[in-house]
Length: 431
Length: 131
Image (tube, rainbow over all chains, first blue to last red; front, side, top):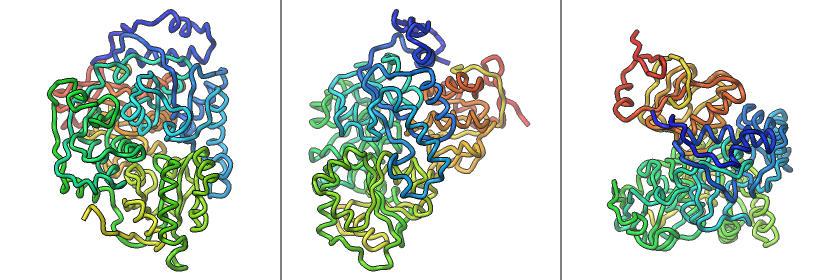
């Protein structure tokens, strides 16, 4: 029964916050933080330079009451703090079928966090915006995929901050000095070794969600290294990998030798130690993992959904190219029941709009959903029974959250399936 | 003990971690993660024994909502400290003056719990209750 030592070394500033010298909101936030520092067995607290607040998602009145309690106490964030998705597309929710009472509460939760001096990014991919953290920076981020990206790809340092705690860190500028904030806990202890994976497959977008899906259960919550990758992945591929691994597992940090910043070599990633576990992964394991992401193998679709994590500018470029290549139109009139929906941030939508990347999507009759995600909102009820997606995170959570059957596929397969209103498979590097 | 309390409940045991977001319905107190062996089970009022939570950082908000609605388990037992569950309970105490008790056990103790029908938390110790 660890964590009861109570030996957290609080600074003079921490004690001042606890005493209420900076106001009631920092006092409450520091009381929760100090208690959690004790639970984690932290010896001290440290300063953070930024926060990403996942507590914005409305999942019930408790989260709303907590947000309004803090806002009512006059809470202000002490460090630049971006906001994760909310339950609502703030300015367009009326175009979807959202119950008004739910919309009202979700909007109240948005306003509460907005009132604290935060940056209203409303995105689960804050690392693809202007507030991207720097290498080595101590930050307190929520949202599992964002945590994996910040630690692994950027080399910033954050624990997996859960809802309710991220905002306490932002209000105080402090966090317990534990876990991935500290050098010694950032070395890989496990290695996933890719064996004989063809370059063509490793270059494919749909390889990374599948690899992440395998990585999650193997890594448990330890830092893990991926060896034997024959290509250098793109940013969006690393994003998909982290999101998948943080859904099927609790992965908060992965290293890829020669790719991610703390792993020039595999020996560096391991700190010169032997791994405690090695998992060899070849084509058979990858194919099995890909099949596991699909629960709806064939037949008609209600919705094709892209963009978890939120679609990037580069991904809109790829989607526009595929739509242009395939012809914008649907294959026949009867497939109009199948929606094509892309979830993204308002900032990326605006950029894509200005670059003309949204025209093919509009021509197709596809829809954008910003500020939120199909998993966090009732904005798309009734049309989500049979889903197809290129996101392992959507594929993982949709059955539990939406009661949906899901097909996982590549971007091209998703577009072609939307055109035909049913699951379409295409020959490719998986065969 | 991570979060103090005295409580008892039927043991609901699994060796797979659970994400409460997408995995626990705060309205009914049931496990809804279709990937999880406890899917469909009612966890409200039980002694829920899990190795840990997994995945989403929204797990805490879902458990806090269950605490508000009184659909949370009575006791949460994890293998090692699970900070997500602990946090929801710490905030539950701040907001509503109540929460499940949270207990962290080592590997051996975790395995022993597998066939306990019920358990009671007595002065910080887990006690097997039969029948």
